[in-house]
Amino acid sequence: MGNSDIDALRAILAASPRPQSLAERRARMEEVTAIDPIDPDIVVTPVDAGGVPGEWSLAPGADPARVLLFLHGGGYSSGSLKSHRTMVTGAGRAGGIRTLAIAYRLAPEHPFPAALDDAEAAYGFLLAHGYAASSIAVGGDSAGGGLTLALFQRLRAKGLDLPACGWLVSPWVDLHMSGASIDAKDAVDPLIHRAYLEMLAEAYLSGGGSRSDPLVSPLHADLSGLPPILIQVGSAETLLDDAVRMAGRLGACDGEVRLSIYPHMIHAWPIWYHRLADGRRALAEAGAFLGERLGG
Image 1 (cartoon, rainbow, N blue to C red):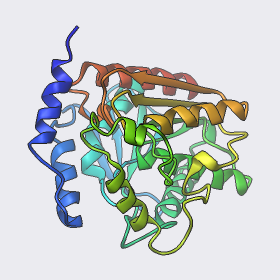
Image 2: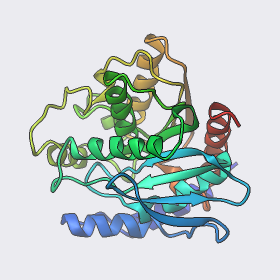
Image 3: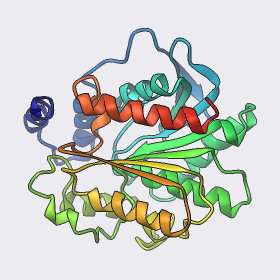
């Protein structure tokens, strides 16, 4: 079977190269990720999630008593509710659950740990509104995947109940960029490259902090006692080794982890699931995982 759908997406991305200024990069991310609308029957509602701007989504027939807290990607410097709305609402439909996406503060204006503080505030918002931890999943793509693992660590350190499960798509979990795939996959990854990651890491830590901090690079964390986690990654990603090594580290800590590698897929490909058969397959896999772990 050919890969005409991913080739067509690659052509769209190539026609919109990443600009240099931060404002233009943020705008460009929304342009290339929001090219497909959400399904018209999904209800999206703005919400103040513990002081953090957010959006609920609910597909017809979905269970509003179970929820996915979603933390978008964008290297901690880009990304928004708009950029990931299609992916988030699609995941909610696939899992038959409600979603809460948040617009956490971005670097360099708001460096580490602002994003983590906002993720924790949104989780507290869900608890305060009657959601048991066993009815909450947390997930995200790219930096949002790393942020998910940082949130798990902070909640565990505070003795709080952890969410039922985690969902990581193309997670960025090593800000040292020590994985071999950073260079080995450079020629085939149309989005993520070492120089760009270096710039993002510097922005995220512009207020101080270390790339070795486990809340910054969860690959180096104590990963014991975390909930079950699904990791999805494409084979054409420079961050492939982040996902593979994270799965190995979770397993070494006796954690329950599932790693799915999708051939030929690029960074955060489920964003474009309307165009990619493997994007739909990834959301179906994630939906089944979330539905099962949340008691569906």
